[in-house]
View 1 (cartoon, helix red, strand yellow):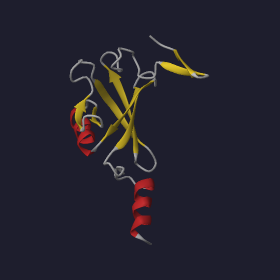
View 2 (cartoon, one colour):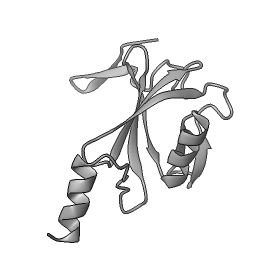
View 3 (cartoon, one colour):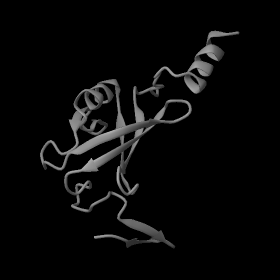
View 4 (cartoon, one colour):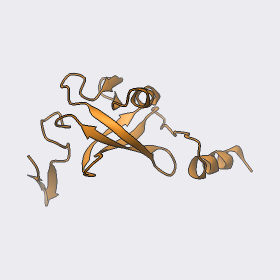
Length: 127
């Protein structure tokens, strides 16, 4: 059996956490409200952000635009307290179940997903 097959089997069926970062060293991270299940935001994590999140219990991400680590709420105080991290089947995406300390979106909305697509228009669905 090739090492690729062993790695795939270990990653998909095993119990070891073997995150599969993309070519840019990132994983997709979907943040959902730990109590309601509402989707709050989507961001990216590199190894440093993942380690900081696991160490502190506060959500950290990799800013692609700034090219650096950032903690959600570092300037606003609206941190995300991570209750649980779910890992997808091939370990290249995460779901962070978190409790927000205020609005999650930089616009002040509770979630970054505050609009829905209606034809070619965006319609606000939450304050």
